[in-house]
Length: 346
Image (cartoon, rainbow, N blue to C red; front, side, top):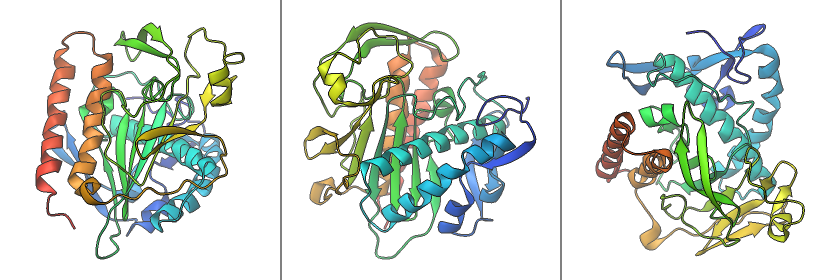
């Protein structure tokens, strides 16, 4: 396997190593040298054990330096969330950028660790994936009698994630972040144009048909029903679409875009039983109260990662594809595991 830069996808210039999960995050959550399990190597049938500190991917020195500023901007945002301090929409968008970076970085990392178990030809890299497709994020506070330090990445070990790095979970001490991003995955929710039929054609390329544009919002996310979180935000991004709607004359898109030229929507959020756009990006995003029947065990929260991967993979399946069907069945076992064996988590 040839080495490629995780940021630009080219052979690394002035070789460097990028920590997919940054040093500041490792130190915030425990011993940066700790050894953790990363699932199983499907080709060799062996468990993957690695230290967080050595969890790196190739990068160009120039590319690595370019994205160092993002880490510095995101660190105080994560610290605020861990302290249950509200963030504003600009900070949420910055955090979504960082989650794009981490999710694709983890995808490339597993591409190396498991020696391309999915047999793919990577076309996505951090540079061409940050802020380019629909995305969402949900924050959950993990209630416990004591502070619990720790860092876990959920969903990144699956074959589904290798085929389509659409959804993952990140536990940072006492918060859990569910993050998803995919083509038009929340456009319909936010009233934006979307294709009703999406099919995988070849090596990640998509066929988009039957475009619809309803200008109405909804909470249903492409077959995934989210649980209630303290903060759930969505951002429609259609930078790479070829739908002919004029973003400069359509009143709904004029009102709900922060960059019409790049077709980037404003931030939307779940609020009670509604989906509302956020027009003041400097305003604080209040936390919703999660109590009573809405409080779930951590296993149920984590299972949504694997449900999301299945839902987003099913969107693009054209007919019965044996590999994809096997992948979906494997994820169902993860869902069962987390729902059953984490009932006594505290």
